[in-house]
Image 1 (cartoon, rainbow, N blue to C red):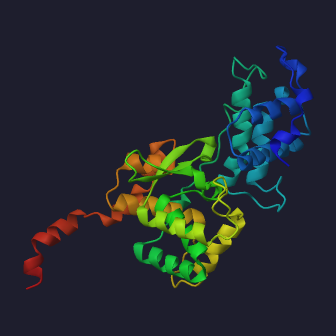
Image 2 (tube, rainbow, N blue to C red; image 1 turned 180 degrees about the vertical axis):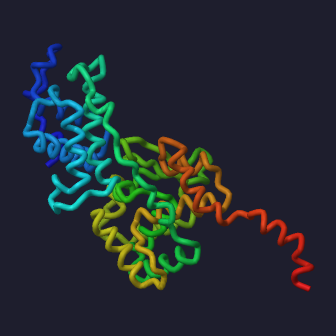
Image 3 (cartoon, rainbow, N blue to C red; image 1 turned 30 degrees about the horizontal axis):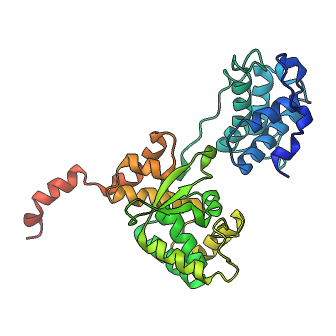
Length: 320
């Protein structure tokens, strides 16, 4: 059920006094005001509901730093988890983020649901960057694409889109035919991403070869009846993950490749080939350029170091 369906019209009242709203209404107003995807809204609501269950549904405006700190520690030590196992720093941060966002929003002077924000002093565990080496080399990329092509033209096309365009899986599955368009000169093809992270839109250039393959795919769809709003792939995220996994299992390299690895691969290969950092940031839809700069660590080993330069000037002598 959509998050919007949880929120009844009768709950919406234009009342200046914030005490006139229940916690459920405040949470629903918060979620409705966010320009996020259904998946993000669902995850945020789930995290907030779990926190409220932990505090025994104590009124949100009475929550202090102590309850938040205890909740964080319970997650870190596996006390308040289904598996009874400690959660990773990244997972803990993801569980806390919706709560911090709710209080930051609700304590804004123009909104005024909460007099204070109890999350301002809450320290989130440091999240290590484990995705530093989550990318494929050129050889591995070609190997994976060949296996995807053996599976089917559709699977090959999915792999190409993820690698060539650097999309998130949610963005891939949201593509409709009318999201593609030509520029004014009728030479360049662009894809309008309408369901980016945080509900943001961006434009991504589509290579001509990929466009040709997309059109071949369009022709092969017997169910397609000229509806431009039809999605390219009627698949779930899990199905796309299985498609990539099946191809990966047939490759000789030992890497646990996921669809998101292909997004990392796009960024790494683009920068390694000399792409502008700002352009890569815009293509990936990163809000902060610092996020894109992480991929520079992947290509630093490809650059010459001082021993390489000295070796070059002595190469003739060393080879004699």
